[in-house]
Image (tube, rainbow, N blue to C red; front, side, top):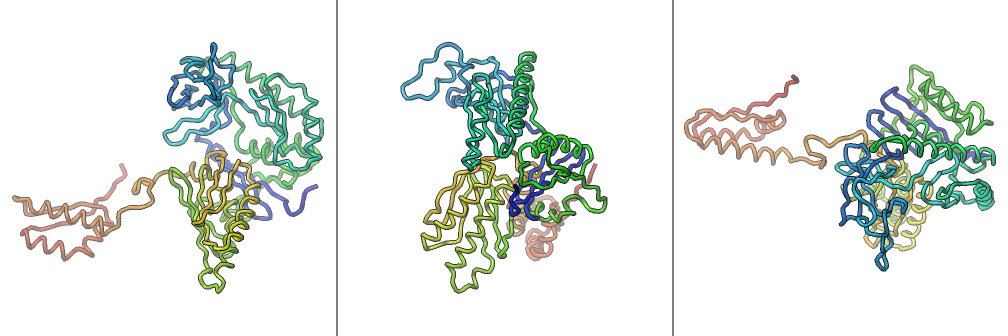
Length: 489
C-alpha cells in the first residue's frame, strides 16, 4: 500500500519532434527532472557492433569505431574474456592481461555506451552488456543473480531471490531485481524475464547479420524510459500533454499495473501548459540557475569547473543571530537536505565539494554528515560521501546518470569563452588608450580613428574624454571614437 507521505506524481511534457521533459514531484515539490532534446542524439544504453581501431598500450585501452563521430574508449577491465585471442600469460599480481597481447586492431566487438561523449572525449564503452526491464536488469557476461541493495525488506528480498532461482537462464546471463519488482506477482516477474530474454536473442541475431560499425539496439526514449524505470507504487498519477505519448504510456502502464485504473491522465487545457497548471514552472526554471534557494532564506551557489563542482552555502539571516553555532548547524542541516535534492535535479556527476558554514563542535559535524548520507540514499545514482574536513569542506562523488539539463541546454559564452568573467571596462579602456596613443604618435596623419564596441565607446567618451583631449593637444591630431555595428547579412 502506498505511504501517503510519499505520494508522487509524474509529469511528461512533450514538444513533438523536439523535446521531452519528465518531472517527478512529491506534494508539489519537484524531486527529479529529466529532459531530452530530440535533435541531440542520446546514445547511453545503445548497443553497437564495432571494431578495434587502435590499442593504446600506455592507457591499456582500445579505441572502438562504432559509427560515431569520435571513436569510443574501451578499458581492459570492460573487456569480457570471450574476446581474448590466444593465450595470455598473466604477470604476478595483475588482475588483467596486457590488452595488446589479447586483442588486435580490426577485431569486432559488441559494445554498449555507458557514458555519453563529452567535449572532445569519446563515449565510454563496455562489452558487459545490460538490458533494463520493468522488474529486472538483464546482464550479459556477468552471471550473477541478485536483488538491488535498495530493496531493504528482508521478506521481499527472500521472495525475489526465490523467483530468480526459479528462472532457467543461459550461461553467462545474470538478473538483478530492481526496486520496481517490489510487490510484483510471480507471473509479472516471469513475463519481464521472458521479454528481456527474447530481446537479447534478437540483439544477438541482429549483430550476426550486420557489418561493423552498426547499431544493433537503441534504448527507449525518455518518456517510455521514465515510466519503465521510475514508475513505482508511490506514483499515484501520470500526467501527459501529448495524445500520441499518452496512448503509448497508457498501454505500457496497463501491462505493468493492470489493477491501477486511470493512472495515466491527458492534459488538454489550452490556456495553461502542463507544468503551469501544477505550479512547477518556477522550480524547473531554478534548475538552470547558478543559485538555489532554501526555505530559511539562505542560498546555495553552484560553480562547475573541469575538475569538480563547488557548492557554497550563503546563510541569509544567520549574521544577526546571537547563537551563531546553533544557527550554523540549523542552516547546514537544511543545506544538506537541499543539496542532495539539487544534485538529483541537476544530475551533477563526478567530484563535488561542499563548503559548509564553519561548525566548531565535532558533534554538529557528525550530525550534518548523518543527514547528508541519509538524504543521498534516495538518489538513484551511486554516491560516496566523505566526512567534513577541519576546514568545513565535504567531498562526495556521484555517478552521472546522463547528460544534465544544463549540459544539453547551454553553450560557452562567446564573450568570456565559458570562464564566466570578462575584462572590466576600465581595463578595456586602458588597452584602447594604448592603441590610440600608438596611432597618434605616427607621423603623416591628421586623424586617428578608433572603432570599438558600443559599450566601450560610451565608456571612453564619458570617462576618458579628458585623456583623449590631452592626446589631441600633445600630438596636434583629431581623435574620433566610432562604434562598430554588427549587421545581419
